Length: 136
Image 1 (tube, rainbow, N blue to C red):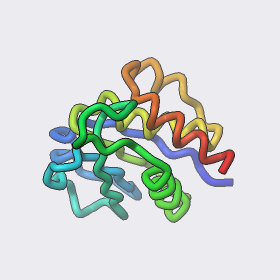
Image 2 (cartoon, helix red, strand yellow; image 1 turned 90 degrees about the horizontal axis):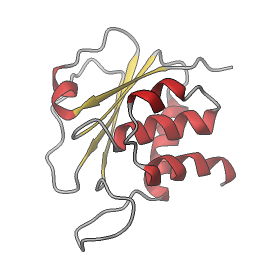
Image 3 (tube, rainbow, N blue to C red; image 1 turned 135 degrees about the horizontal axis):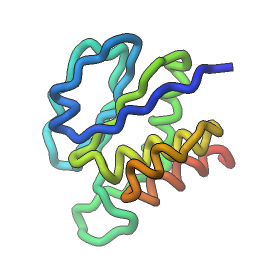
Image 4 (tube, rainbow, N blue to C red; image 1 turned 120 degrees about the horizontal axis):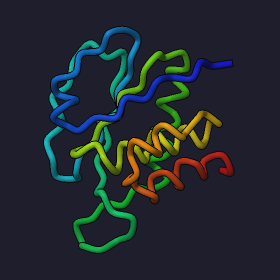
């Protein structure tokens, strides 16, 4: 059985100052037109994604979280099964990144209560899309 990693949810600014202390991976989320975050090269691996922080299409420039994003995240997590810590960041660290952490926790049957209390504004599209990967 794989270990349950600790999720660290950060803003972009916090992530750019964060230094991994061990076997850590990072899911780096940015707006579609944003430059990649300048994060530590001490992460074992980094997955970079670009999508808009929305739950339904609004503006023509919106990039909705979709099955391809969910697949990339689950493939990434599957590639690094014995990771002590998963750092997930987005611009503010309050919606997309906690949505990813909660969706992965739902998918794997990991505890969610602490994340739900700490990040009540999680992105519902991200969380439900990731959790739905179980049914795919």
